[in-house]
Amino acid sequence: MEINFIIKRQKSDYTNFVILKRETDIVSFEELYNETPGIFITLDEDHSITYHMTEHIDPMGMAENMPEKICIKNAGSIYYSLNTPEWFGEKFYSLNILNNFERRFVENKIMTPEEKLYADLIKRNFIVKSGFKYGEHFRIYSESMDMHAEYLIGLIDKEEWYKISRAVRLSVSVRKSMVFAGFINNEIKYIEMKRIKDI
Image (tube, rainbow, N blue to C red):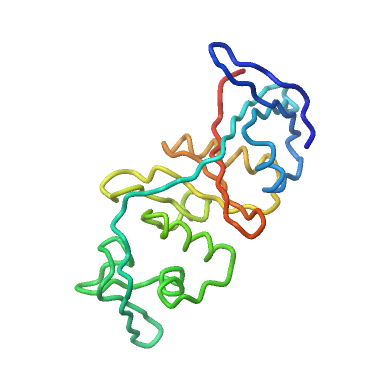
């Protein structure tokens, strides 16, 4: 971990690592996790400075728990459930049509990193929906879909710094918090990243 300097924020009893990042730096999740909590500074070619602050989080939702035993059926390539919460699946008359993440979760056939993240978020009592329209893996609701989703979740292994910064900027524009997830020693960890005005 390369720490450029440490700063004590005004009216604060803690210090932060301050790390300089170039727009094109490749950042691994492990590196980002180890540098958190921290403040990241990027000076772009237009001499504009962007500041980001990160913190470790252990998010927990309050959505209705999944039943211990879930009954699913299929009609050809369409899978549906009969005893899942209202938000699980896509409502079609009296059925909840399941997408691939939902079906594999119910069948306990979780294989890909994205499926593991999905399952972890469900076990943390979040309502989990696609984040595709925001350019992320998932959007999650803490309790109910009557309100806006509070978080966008992006799963990263290694990523260019400008793409991480872009995700944070987009999350702010849609009034959501940006959370990055990744694997540390095969365990899913979470980092919330915010854009701040200055240090």
